[in-house]
Length: 161
Image (cartoon, rainbow, N blue to C red; front, side):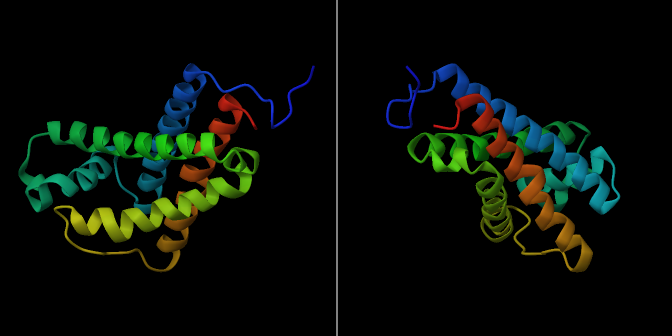
């Protein structure tokens, strides 16, 4: 007997957790490297920029451990984002069925939330959105480097239905 969308078995908790971890870690890693390329920075510079969300400009005078806080925060944020997508896709399987469309759209949502909610509420307290080519690179990065991998891992590990 073949499974249809109506009779498809529920995904195992292990596959759900695997999709969250795989999508979240891949998106965070890709995004971290994309930030280094877009802004011409180092790993430490990107980690410091992320940690500024917690500590503001005081991050400039803090010890190197602040890099670990920045990196952990970055991965934590994208693991939460992956959790949101994967768990929502359990209720709305179309998110997995159309991953090539919904993934980039989810990336747009992440961009909007980060730039207009998270950053203004952080210790940075400013909306300093990129302009010109940096905007295109960052916006496209959120679509195809963050949203798409999360959606494709959900589809691959949780299934289409």
